[in-house]
Amino acid sequence: MKLLVAGAESLDDVPGLDAATDFAEIHFAPDDNALATGLPGSEILLGWDFTGCNLGDHWHLADSLRWIHWCGAGVDRLLFPGLTSSDVLVTNARGIFDRAMAETVLGYMLAEAKRFRESWDLQKSHSWLYRRSDRLLGQHALVVGVGSIGHAVGELLQAVGIRVQGVGRTAREDDPVFGRIHDMADLNRLSAEQDWVIGVLPSTASTRDVFDAEFFAALSPRARFINIGRGDAVAEDALQQALQSGAIAGAMLDVFKQEPLPEKNPLWDTPNLFVSPHISGDYHSFPRDMVEMFLENLSRYRSGDALANRVDKVQGYAARD
Image 1 (cartoon, rainbow, N blue to C red):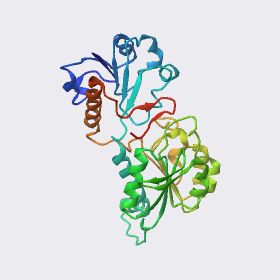
Image 2 (cartoon, one colour):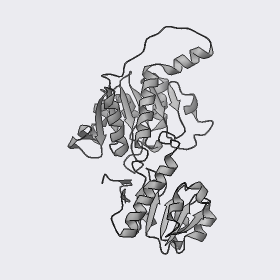
Image 3 (cartoon, rainbow, N blue to C red):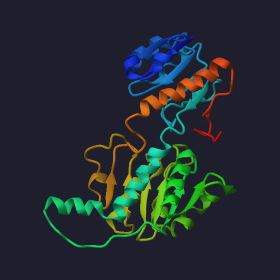
Image 4 (cartoon, one colour):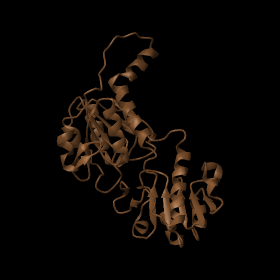
């Protein structure tokens, strides 16, 4: 079988993929031209990195493609109408980044509650200033987006004594982490009661600008907002205004509508906003973990078994297996 790896130049870029060389003819497409050349005859496409590769432009060349494995949790950069309406299976790296992203959220919260940023600034000026901080124990957090990442966030926050609720696409009972999951219609009402609201939403037509001016107006002045899902879920102008006016206590954003965040974007200088460059889920060994996940699915594929992490191409995310 022919396996095409998009966004890599050789096996050196994809640690552990050499395990597939015994039964797969592996080709590499580091750029758009190589993708166009490599697509004909390819049965499997491993989306290692689609930067500089536009699959939609060359979709007519995918004459043998049966399966795409996307090395990421969000598939919004991959999907386009031709793929969505096709019979090509899509899987993703759901689960790989869950714990790292949950730890990032907890890190944000600890840094804010314990006023670490102030301590670092004071250290630079050699200033010894006694002050008190907050405890996370007993605080309230709302996780908006209750897929595998949202569940990992909820579990970790509960472990340190935070009272956690969840909001998802549909309401349901008896969730193993959140108990009752509320639907999106309850977002603003529930958010008014929170110390923290954490966005973990995928990028879909229904999630764009969910966190809008009305949402931020509903928050308590003590509340802080965290977004590790997708940047297009946030109306950035509304968030900026809420921070500048002091309507909310702070925000931590790892994702943005435009990435990289332009140098002159006013978010860089917005008070009480912490910016990180879409790194909440990345850790040193994650590339090898992604390859191991792909190889497990490749074994299923060769055996004719159902693939794990199958993406609903219409909804735009992988449902829980």
